[in-house]
Image 1 (cartoon, rainbow, N blue to C red):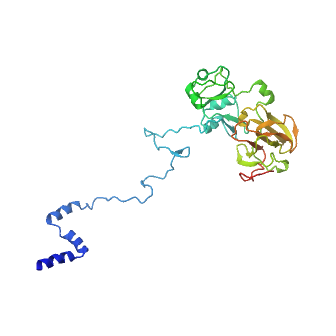
Image 2: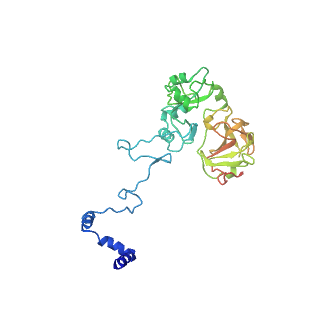
Image 3: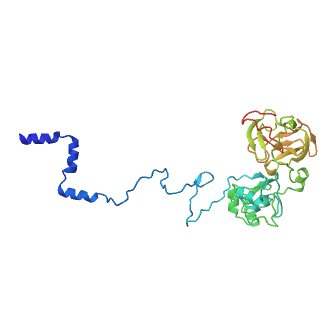
Length: 352
């Protein structure tokens, strides 16, 4: 009975007693083994970092990215600073209005192309000067733009411009064996303009008869000239893009909608051949005096003529999709004057 009571008493002990016994009731050999894992008080113990950065000894730095998303390594394979490439964001030809202080090399760097690409696309030479307000054509990659002549092939163009036929086909979405359409424009990536392969962005003699070589534009933006504006350029147009490029706004309206001069002035530039024309397509520029000018782009038809005097409300053309555009709208710029559409909300019907 005494033995049974001893066993029952042992199981009746609280769990805490068992825990204490585990630490104090070790056999001599077990106690000797446990002493071997006691840390040396002279050793520095590791401590968790309290800084959100897992490496708290590292100084603060901004993460480097390219195209606003992809991280750039802090060092290249050899431990040197990594190389970053300027990649074309689009395959579309762009246009750029020269700002005060701009240089050709800086503009080329901004778009990730060579300086020669800017020169060739705009019929300029190394001795040419650029001025604020001048509009430049910018190709999406270093190279040249070419208008296909009858009988030309990808192979002959590659030879002519010292380029690669497969790259030309890939960039322009062509099959390597497809025939080229005479009159179409293609971009030659890496192409080099030579004396016998002059840039084909020059207009023909017939086209120059109807379109001046380059539009005359004053600087974009300026003082409030609301007293000049007597008529809205379109009726019931919707503002689809706020101020952009050279102090411009885009007003959406169906193809064929009537376009009116916003104020009195003299027509100084007209393009009617439906060409790319710096991205504007068919367009009209009106000089309102004192350097104030307005430009109306992407027209389907033009009613104005160079030298014509117009009043606010004079019909000058119709809405179209010529030049660089993805939808029917009027691109209207205000030069040397504040944009009167600046107060309009996007997607709203706004008039002067």
